Image (tube, rainbow, N blue to C red; front, side, top):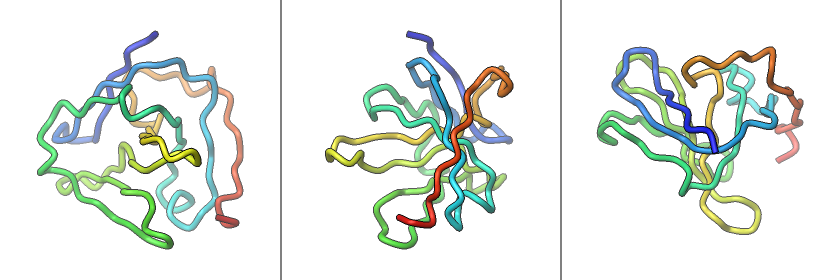
Amino acid sequence: MTTYTGGCHCGKIAYTVEGEIEQAMDCNCSMCLKRGGLLWFVPRAAFELTTDSADLGTYRFNKNAIDHHFCASCGISPFSEGKMPDGSPMTAINVRCLDGIDLSRIKIVPINGREF
């Protein structure tokens, strides 16, 4: 397993996440389309927030099923939290917010999030 570090622009939100990035999803829902995130879904147990959760802003919309977190200081959205279809906790990592990632080496899969 590879351990990645990531976070927001100003550093108030930082995390580590373990796993292998096989692909990232480019969702076209109204939220993802505007923020430009590329999502990698991992089990919640693979994710560790290493900064104070008090610095997180949270936005929910539509079915209010996903906590879309952002930095209250710089506005960057480094991750979201919710549940997988089987009900298990998951974290959606914005791979653009991971340190040292070469996006040209990651398979990008378009997802029609407007249907959800």
